[in-house]
Length: 113
Ligand code: 5GP
Ligand code: ZN
Image 1: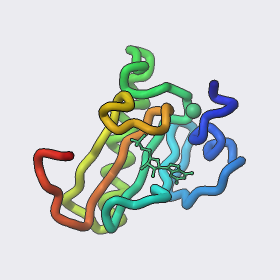
Image 2 (image 1 turned 90 degrees about the vertical axis):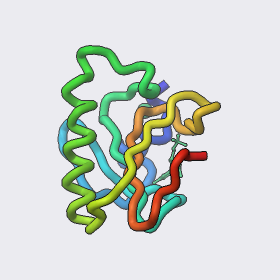
Image 3 (image 1 turned 180 degrees about the vertical axis):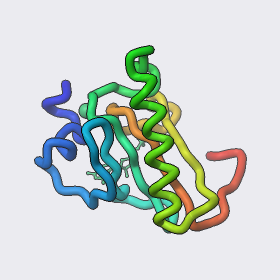
């Protein structure tokens, strides 16, 4: 499955992306269809199909998504931001590689749509 996974292809450099941060565990890049003035995705380099696939061995890297996200939000100048993980098609998941959305730069309504 990772062979055909869009985000695995971005990790491997087979599809270009506007990358903001990368290390051995995670990659952050701008969303191609931003839903807010700042819209960034932070993903683990390990292929996990989504939140439902996270196990105990992934806890460190999943926590790192948030820490890296904090640093990116600070650099992007958005002290107020929303983090979103969609799990499953009905919840809005379209890419089945775990990703954390960082959305900011505008007022965020609640409840979400
Ligand atoms: P989901 O709907 O699965 O939670 O989020 C997937 C996100 O990936 C969407 O916000 C979508 O705009 C973004 N996306 C889809 N294809 C690409 C792509 O090729 N490059 C980038 N940078 N983002 C993408
Ligand atoms: Zn993948």
